[in-house]
Each structure stands twice: as structure tokens, then as C-alpha cells.
Length: 240
Image (cartoon, rainbow, N blue to C red; front, side):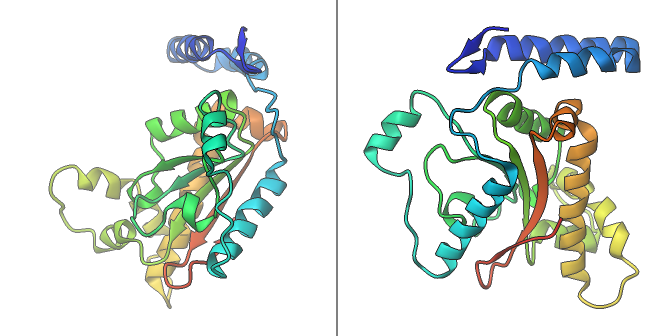
């Protein structure tokens, strides 16, 4: 496959994904090995690559700076803006809640081109979310995906209430209900238990729903973790 700036060409990646999708739909599991072989050819060599564990450390170090109000505002200069305009090499991907109080680049003290961020209410995994994260890892070379939920998540609260909602809001809540079912008979802080359960559920769903991500996980080229942000203190804790 042709490569651009060390990465597989986007057109070829999309062509690959389309062919595999059609084959899988038509012939089922018999095309598993074909996809596994093809995925091996698309994972890029990121010139700024860091290990998954180093990516976690970098995020948590940045979060500690944010908590201590000692932010460095890295990679936000005009010079860096011009640099990443040519190509992006995000060291981590974040699937976060769309809540306005949880902006990933700020709470992790990161800059332009550092993070590939996908945000949706309740940090819910969907086909479009999976596709975005496949792009971040298989095309852009991110070796870490963090599913970032937060305390007192409104979407999780609505899933617990289990009441009718207007418009398409209910579609989001449906994606959270399985996690609420896991903790509904527990005693204690049911809300926080459900938040944690939802982070864990969405993390598991990511791992189970994409053969591209599964391949990278199996080769040690990717790590998927869950984390919870405390909106009162600003602290991020790894939970899975």
C-alpha cells in the first residue's frame, strides 16, 4: 500500500476497509484471516511514537499539572501550529463525554496535534466512533485509546431514570443502559457505580467490536484503558 508521510494513504485505507466490510458481510468469518493479514500492512510507523504506557504517563503528568495549576501549554506555539498543519501524529486517542466541563486537551495539558479526540454524550461507542478510533490508530499511529468518563455524568443519570426522552436523545441512552443493568442491585453510590460500569462497558465494547483494533491489541501496538474524571477536583483516575 502507498504511504503518505510514513503513513498508509487514506484512500487505500478506506478502500481496504470497504472491501473487508463487504467480504465479511457476504462470506462471514471465512474472511477473518484476510482482514488480519491486511491490517498488518496498514499500521504506520509514527516518527514521534511512544509506547502505550508512556502515553498514559504523559497524560497523567499533564493532568497533575492541570490540578496543580502549573500548566505548560505545550505544543501551542505558532511554529508548532505550522508544523502540525503538514501532518498529525497524535500520541493518544480519547473517547470522551461531550460534557463541556471535560475538554481533554485542557485537563491533560496537551497541545495541537497531541490528542485525537472523539466526544459524544456518555462516551458511548457506536459505529462512527469505532471508525474514528480505527483511523486514529491504524492510519495516524496512536498507540493508546482512553475511554474517559466523568463523575455525575448526565447521560448516565438519564439511563438510571429510564424515562422517555425527546428527539434522538434516547438513542444515546440506549447505549448506556447495559452498563446500568450491571450495577442496579448494588448498594452504595449507585450513580458513581453506574459511571464506572459505563466506562468499563464502553471499553469492552471497543475491544470486541473492531477486528482492526483487536489486531493491534494482539500485537502489542495498542492499549485501551478506561478512566474517570472528577469534575470537582479535576483529577483523572485510571480504572481499567
